[in-house]
Length: 168
Image 1 (cartoon, one colour):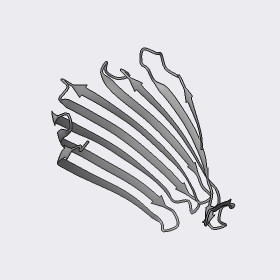
Image 2 (spheres, one colour):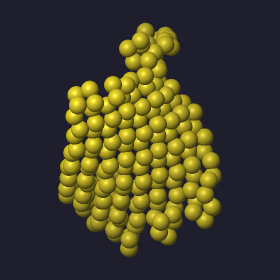
Image 3 (cartoon, rainbow, N blue to C red):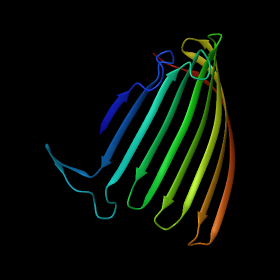
């Protein structure tokens, strides 16, 4: 795995860009001997590339923003994943996290699908290690399968209410 950190935005924003790449192959373990073997014929070698930028004060003066993108190249499919997350603290007791994710996949059978997932989470801190949480999430998925001659559109919504206690 390779990672490289690059300053890419003005220092007043304080953002960093992290780029990593990985090649996934089978590693067989036999006792204390680790032997690197080539990828199995059924799966092939998978290449994964990820870039992530983290910044403070990007959208609002007191927020933290994370932008991430990844690519996977596999003999059976290719996929792209993008996400944008912004975390905003209000009056020390409130935090709002908003996220937008996009995922696209193309398989070697010509099946394609994509998914868009927006979400928002609100935390109210009762104490430093205790909070009430509420999250609303929606998920829209579109799949096109020319082999089965079908197109599917799915819409899901979820609501979460909870109590969090971080034991330290």
